[in-house]
Length: 336
Image 1 (cartoon, helix red, strand yellow):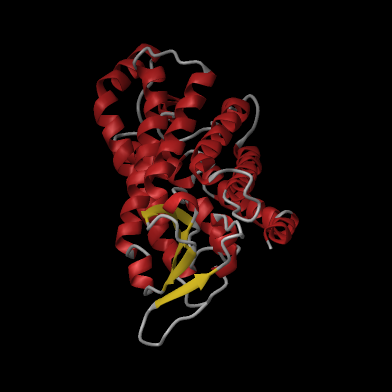
Image 2 (cartoon, rainbow, N blue to C red; image 1 turned 180 degrees about the horizontal axis):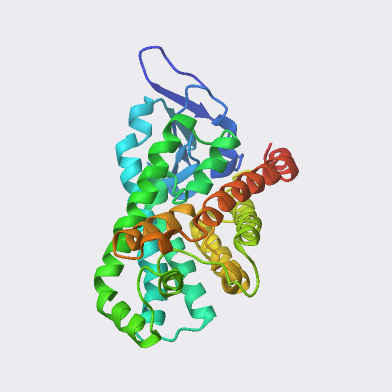
């Protein structure tokens, strides 16, 4: 490779007999410390743009018949969206999850939807997948404070940005839950009247459970048990997230990764939804829970809140370290 001091473009030539796949090309230059954006010319004149810091592919036209790879050196500001843009993406993505997932529960609980467990799980899974698809190119699509904490813990996200990411996620969840409440408020009142529930009483927590904040199934677990269960299921989810996105393993195509994560969410809800509600996301609980706190539930809105915040964070960090220590070393050797 050559890079004249007057030219920010480095040209990497290789023989025409060598098949340089996008993955091999990216692997060959990802270690370059100055690299921020890479463009590798592949077969048929198609080029692959590769952001080394995010491993995100995109397409760029190139002259047909050429076999070369260009390493374009860009400043971090050019290669990475601003922190404000990333936080907005996190808020929007988390809002999509709450609008779709909590909205499906609202429809079933208050509007006579009578969805099955599988139907609700599918709505959550699709909401997560769609949110990841539309935000991952901007923010990396954490969309979950527990995931952000886990990525910080294993050195894959900067700690100084975590509070802003988490704040944005919770804000997006809060706004989406507020819209859900505005849409279903009359149906919620009718639901409470039919069930003889007085909003603000201890028993009134049951009227928002699942649609807004979460509650454990008292017949199965208490608050402490819910915390442990949430930690367990979130550790599984985070393990799968890191596995799906492991570029060295390359077991899941980039375009399918959000769908795999959504499928994991749906599968876990089918298993653990009747136990704790299967939150696995502090923003998904805290944002909607704050809406209930502000709309008359009072102290009932805080019931078992810590199980759905502390549990997922502990579990996500544990799942991330498990993948990092038990699986990632082997996939790195494979990708070398």
